[in-house]
Length: 399
Image (cartoon, rainbow, N blue to C red; front, top):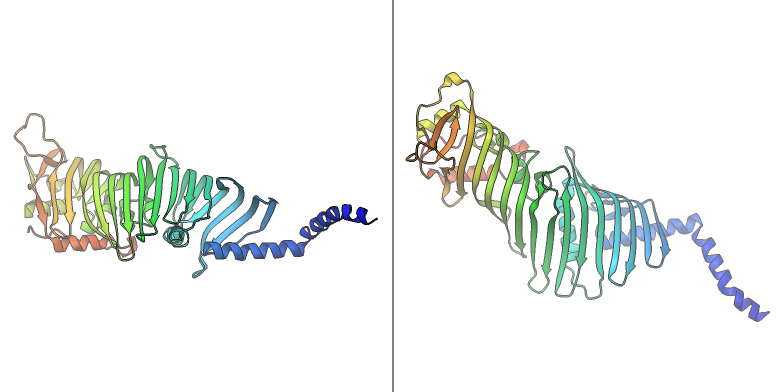
């Protein structure tokens, strides 16, 4: 009889445990304990509908939501999570995630502080797979596809790697984003490589508020590199911006232009929250310019017609058949710009033109300069939100 009871004991224990875990009390207690555990580990308030453990190395979570612990605002919600662990680490498949676009900066800061800045010797590789990620705010929804995230922490260096593609762009290849934290130097270096996959400026705007002024349809092809330590941070942006709204982009200068254009060969330097310098070329084959503003530039000598000046009889705005201007702007030297539009083929002695306006060739004074304090005004405007920006005429006289 004793041997019979000993033989039945494991079976009875498993049966009893199966009954226990099926009770509403146990499931509710398990849910609350894991919500507290995940909240403590992630640094956010975590709530979900249910959690299951099919095996010791697997779990499933339904309807998970993460909230900012200070403001209570929603950061992320996920319909379903399925995770499994093998020798290499955890692999987590995420279904229907939605990231609050207004919380991107907070989310990245949380990942940086809670994970990248914590040296770990025993943590395993973490991989996240998301077929689609929605980034949503009050005005827009942006879709990222084929999002793969890898996180590898060590005692000396921790790395985060992300790859993704944008929906509905002419450049469907994968872009990548990587962050590396040097625990010994207490510094972070990060790189975004978007040379072959356009990244919407709506995604970048939470990190660089100034790109909001390029318009809703603007996208970026290029690289962004940044570094930061306990005292300072700096970022370099190199590449091209497509489908920019020239009206919004020229708003700090009085909004003289309307239409769609491109920014080529951009090289911009940010330091400690401010745009310090930017070089590049703006071009467009489909825009217009304010006639009064154009007359001001003629009067102060920044622009001059090589033939005859477009007259006011053309109306309050005049069509720009072709625009091409190189620019160099920083707080130390102000703004210089030169024409980048080729002259007519039969006029080899002409300078490079700024534009063809009303089919009339227009040149700009070689290295025309705007005073640096006026450029400071423009750069400061580019740090503000759209609601704060008021049109300001900068060029009142030639310096």
